[in-house]
Image (cartoon, rainbow, N blue to C red; front, side, top):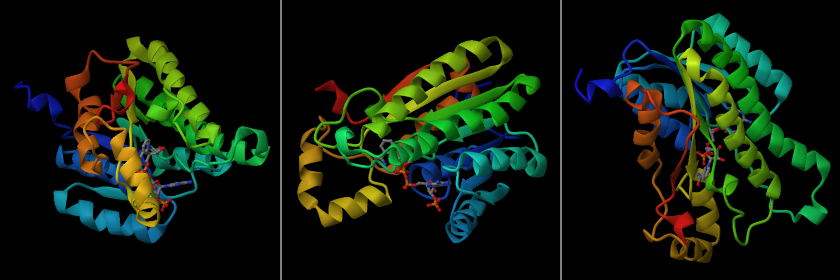
Length: 259
Ligand SMILES: NC(=O)c1ccc[n+]([C@@H]2O[C@H](COP(=O)([O-])OP(=O)(O)OC[C@H]3O[C@@H](n4cnc5c(N)ncnc54)[C@H](OP(=O)(O)O)[C@@H]3O)[C@@H](O)[C@H]2O)c1
């Protein structure tokens, strides 16, 4: 097997939460181009259908499931449905997350805190438990948790510490699960992105261009990331190429956390 063959995903099925837009769509495209069939999870059926149409050009089978992953009850039921309706999953990308609420902690409502924890952390627990749990009996599996550099540092000038706390816990869940499942063929790794130009950020920077200039000045590479720049790392973690890596959190931030 050549080194490039190790990155092939032929015969594998991947489930990507939040696979219809942004980083999740870029990762989905990369995995499908490498040969994987996909199950995409999102809320809006039209956005999912658009992604399906676009990704079908890879020749892979693309299935869809619409659900609010931030609601623990619906999320749990949907993860079970994925196994029932589409069969076993080899690669799980826990990508849904975000929604930073920039309220100072002293003013933050418990309900807002809980919403961010459920969206970012509880969803990761539930989908890992159900889809990852099923991987154990297969003896092979890959879980990739999309965390954030905000799980490693306290982002300067932006409040909303529920997001930081959830992403930090996601990184520790990655390490603990990786240790538990290391001898059963299932690896669990996390990606910690810095700033990427996905829709919410593009909108935000269009309204406040000075924020983009300020943020770019904090990145040694002098720019934000493009979603496709995350796909190669996700493919590495999803494939046999990463067979000896588990419990790692890989930072991809143009150097932001170096300063
Ligand atoms: N972009 C960045 O700069 C950046 C930096 C660090 C970390 N991250 C992390 O990367 C991940 C993806 O971020 P992104 O910027 O790519 O987000 P995005 O562009 O807003 O895309 C989010 C995706 O998730 C789906 N989604 C959102 N909420 C959902 C919910 N409650 N239930 C089901 N699906 C939902 C969206 O589809 P619907 O809207 O149709 O549901 C869409 O497919 C997040 O975990 C985020 O914290 C992003």
